[in-house]
Length: 313
Image 1 (tube, rainbow, N blue to C red):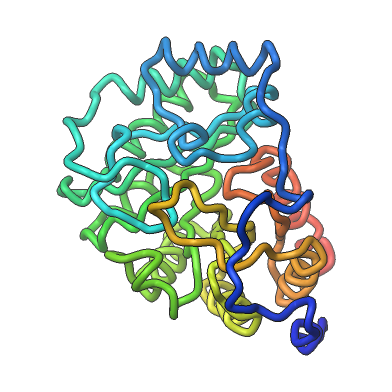
Image 2: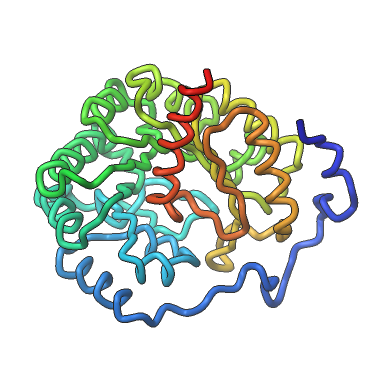
């Protein structure tokens, strides 16, 4: 068991100082310039698909797109909520694109994806929160690219009746819903969302289909304490979450929540050790970790970990 007291060492202590100027060396990434990156970008444009990679200004876009890994964002590019960490546009969304599921299926086939991640904006304006569109996309990917494994990263559906049941009935391989931060910071970082509801959503997904891997992630560097992060780990394990991701929060624009501090790689490694000690099948914890970063390799690791557990139990 890893000792949480390590985090009380000065190098691990959260401070009130807000980092400014250049990012630390462990945060910097190369600008995207590969030919495959351009091909992936063109494919998305031709199919009229949005990606969270672009809309959320992900720092890993160059690496992922160069490897033909992209997270498709369905239900438009406009969100009905205004989370202070997110760079996606807030406003009144347009109508649901009925051709979108087919385009998602074509994208999976054309790009030859082994693993695909489908996410969406919050659509509180829709009766089902967008659950049916997730199910339709899963169905079309199974039709066009039956060898592609599927991960969905869903919103909380505003606790709308039957929404999670619709998604799980479509049989994704991984159900992902991010808690994003610790409960104390929800009011400012994730207004309009409830920590307890997000936990219940993850637990319900596992109850509906225990064979589906469940996954959730948080950002650090927003002013949370190490003890609060560890408590979130405990809550996730109580909800039977299999896979945890922890990454550094980066401020998209001056209008968004400020970075409280840059968490060191050593601290991320400590979080990883603590999480594994609590029984997660897979943990990804690093400054550049994002919910869908290396999702294909992580899915393989999840399956291997489950198989190993069955053999040893």
